[in-house]
Every structure is written in C-alpha cells, then in structure tokens.
Image (cartoon, one colour):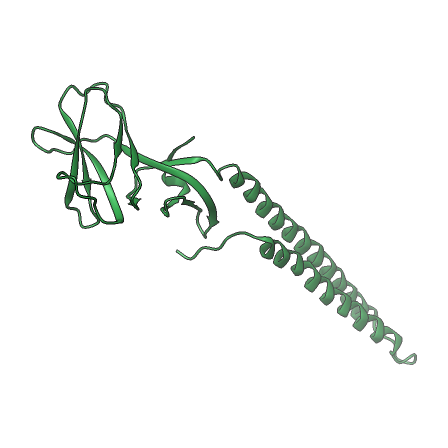
Length: 213
C-alpha cells in the first residue's frame, strides 16, 4: 500500500485550495461588473437575464464559502491525526507479526498460560516456515529472551522470524499469543489506516498493535 508521511506540505496544499476558488469568484465578479458597465443604454440587459446572472453570482459565492469550510475541516483533521498519533512516538508497541532479528536479543511475551499444565516450548521459524530454534518454558513462564542462536548455539542470519508456542510432547501448536515489541519511531498515514515504523525496522498497522507501553 502506498503511504506518505503527513507534513507541512499536506497542510499547505489544503490551504491553497480556498485561494484558487476565491480567484474564480473574483474573476466572475469582474466579468459581471464589466458586462453591466458596457451594456447598451438603449438596450439594457433584460430583468430576467440580470436576475439569472445574480443567481449565478450567489451560487458561486456560496460554493466558494462551502469549499473553504470543507478545506478548513480537512486541515483540522490532519492536525488532529498528528496530535493523536504523536503520543505513540517513543512508546513500546507489541504485536504478533513476524519480527526482525538483526543481531540483538529479542524479548517475547507469551499470553495467558494459567489453564495450561503441560510442558511447553517456543519454536522459532524462519521466513520459509522452518523451525530453526526452540526454547523450553518453565511452568508459568511468560517472558522469553532469545539471543538469536539455534539449537546448537549458532547465530542465525539477520532476517524475519516468527515465534509459536507449542506442546513439548508432540509439537502441537497452542492457540496462545506470542508477541514482541519495539519503540515506535515514526507514524505513516495511508489510505485506510496508520502504519507504525518500529525501531527494529518492522512496520505494523495500527490494528495489529496488541498493546502499548
């Protein structure tokens, strides 16, 4: 999806629209005035024609005012978005999407485990869906730090990975959330919703945020 960062250019573009409409309105007014000044005194403009011209004049004026109000509303909405999303910058945004490993340790949080009384593990999958590392969970453990090494201690390549909670006995995937988070560095506005750019390079939609800290 194509996105663009909201900036002063957006506000300036919105402010320029009323000026263009105002220019059209003034042009119409000058044309009408010139027509009245140069009409033939022996054959003045008919009353119905003059009324029609005035009606058109009024419509142009009302359209100009309406457009200005709409554009002002657009500017207000842009400013509101900026004010709303600026509070997200610098906070930790957690999500359940694939995360980027770039060499630093990754902290993952596991969802509700209170009713699960089994041996569990976290399985780490690469972008091709292959398990490249596993970590056992102690009973009740809900936070796991992964240093980016596989099961024999080798550092995995930089890239995108996914973590899944699985039953240790038969490798069955459990329907429990596994999330990771990073600091929000930038907010981008698209056609449908905002995107958050995290400090590790991951981009997530605002609806994909599971929690903020």
